[in-house]
Image (tube, one colour):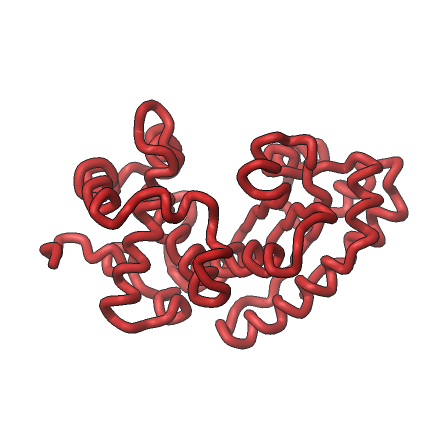
Length: 258
């Protein structure tokens, strides 16, 4: 598989968005188009005609195709379909925090929600992050439904360090750099580590990950970035060397801080 020419789907059916979504049913086992549409919309999808027109006039598909071939080679990554759709430019938070771009990754597919304003560097950073997720999900033998908070933050930390490794700090997510290392160390020891076993299905997982309910903003994401960065610096390795490692080993659980 490769980058699916969803631009052709969009151009042909821009007045009938559910026909576009209907073509995704075969990639989701037992899920109908309405549910797929509702789910993707939560993550930034827009099928407004004006957003479709703006996106299909870009060369974003070519940028992602080239990047996919490159990363698949250097990371020995999986051969999966990548779907590109318009993002919801009217979403204030999406625009403010992510410049109207978002991604949604599964073990066997990736969705990118993009706007015409997104630059090639932005697209590369987003795709690097999302494809890194896919590589980790395929190389680390643990079912997603069994993921704990620690698994999730390491997954996110790997992806963000892959962006840093490849494109530099200036292309990492807005939340990186929110705290210094001493603050992150304290957040890890006092907030995240005592709850590292919380399952993904538990409400507290999201609260800690995003920093809801009086927890520090984006706590889990920031600590995950810190733990992976610390491990990489200590052991002089690249993110691709960590795809198969146990979450607990990357976090160095149980080891005394140096």
